[in-house]
Image (cartoon, rainbow, N blue to C red):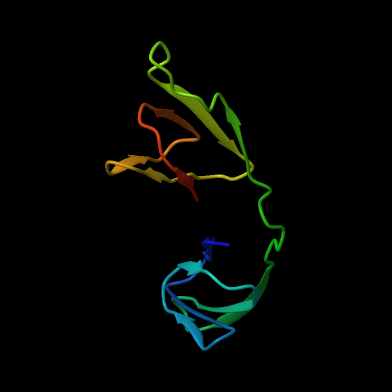
Amino acid sequence: MTSVTRTASGGTSYQWSGPNSYSANTAVATINSAGTYTVTVTGSNGCTATATTAISLDGTAPSPSITGSTNLTCSVTSVTRTASGGTSYQWSGPNSYSANTAVATINSAGTYTVT
């Protein structure tokens, strides 16, 4: 999990609390850990109310794969490799090669890494 946001409304001040000493005092809370979070909302009349939200972590690891042609030759000067199984990709390779898409066009021999 990277982060999720939760938004409280109906008050003039907000106080969020949660696991790992999480604290925020805005209507919008940015949360990056699983657990139960509580917001206390204070209205303009001074009355307070609380609400809770549970954030769960999807522990399923991505199942990566790479497909495409692998051989450069005198007549084949570039190949396309496609990564799948994730939501974002970062390729690196020889000669400072870098790409941040699922599809990489490669024109130099060497070892390429995608994360």
